[in-house]
Image 1 (cartoon, rainbow, N blue to C red):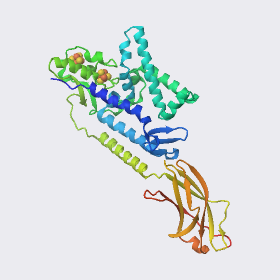
Image 2: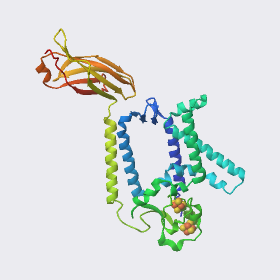
Image 3: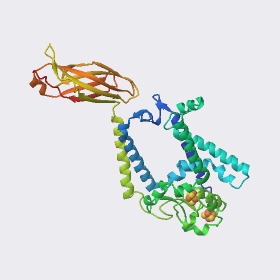
Amino acid sequence: MTNNRMRPWRRLTEAVQAVLLLGIPFVRINGESALRFDIQTLRLHVFGTSLWMDEFFIVLIAILFFTFLIIFVTQIFGRIWCGWLCPQTVIIDLTWFLDRAASKTIIRKAVAYGLTLLVSIIVAADLIWYFISPYEFISALMAGNLGAVASGFWVGLCAIIFMNYAFLRHSWCATVCPYAKLQGALFDDRTMIIGFDNRRRDECMDCSACVRVCPVNIDIRNGLQAACIACAECVDACAVRMERKKGKSLISYFFGSPGSSGSLIRTNVIIFGALTLLSFAFFLYLSLSRSPLDVTVLPSPKFEAKMTAQGEVINAYTLALENRGRNDLALSLKAYRNGTRLKATPEKIMIRAGAYLRIPAFIFSPGSADAMRAGQSELVLETDGPDKIRATRKVILRAPEVL
Ligand code: SF4
Ligand code: SF4
């Protein structure tokens, strides 16, 4: 009998994750980073969209969604994140040579620490690339003008990351990591764990292979322990031993504990599953309904309503426009009163991508003071073409004092 090994699948998952985390900063969509918070403009670029600071409630909803998702997944699958996806685990597995070098010569140790420093330099740069485009970062580095702030952050991050991977390693999970501490409160008696099957204790050879391979030095046979990061190394170690006896691993994944029963669909899972879905739906709605054009219309305080020689009343406004999109916008300005088109100037407004514009605008309306007070008036800014962007704002038309 051959037991399925967890390690190859874990390594594959870790490799995919490492490639994604390192590769995403280099991906460009519509000329911008796929995922980056630009410090200079205070904008978050997310897969083709740019969110401005005052739209960060969308980011807050996204954070809420991820929080509910993490709770939901933890309630069902326990510490699956820690063992399979957490960057801390991934990099520790990537720097496995450091553990091996502990009992080797000083040269082997120096090489291992040197390689860990190299990994730390790359990881620190990768973190910075989520704030400064890697293309700008690398070209500035090559030209020798990276700047004191970026260089300082790089060195500081590198030092923290190196200390973590070189000295803390898995003790981070047991001592510092807040998620690890939260999990005790999120687990229930049906959460998936890695456990020793006590019903088959007689089959255990007391070979201690599961203890020797454990990166946090625990004996899983003594029951679930807070330090366990669910790396499944003990599952594979026992599987190898038990194969010699043509048996299955005594250590495995269990929902709850070995032999326990009960529904996996329980109240807490339903509640957090629903919250996860709702917050995701709300996030999608907010993301898809956002307009790249932000318009504020203010009555001009310095310009009283005036009557022209042709009998038209001029009202003046200040338009504050923000183009939050990636493309320049050619806008037409239109005005309506009770659905009737009025003359408005300027008729055309050009605003560059990412620009903020404050310009005066005028509405020319015929009619008496009574007619002007009646009904609804609005200003419309819209682009031409099939993918029309349109913003409508209600305005008040004032009558001149002479009327
Ligand atoms: S007991 Fe040790 S080896 Fe087994 S899953 Fe937990 S941390 Fe990994
Ligand atoms: S590896 Fe398996 S057989 Fe060996 S001590 Fe651990 S549980 Fe028992």
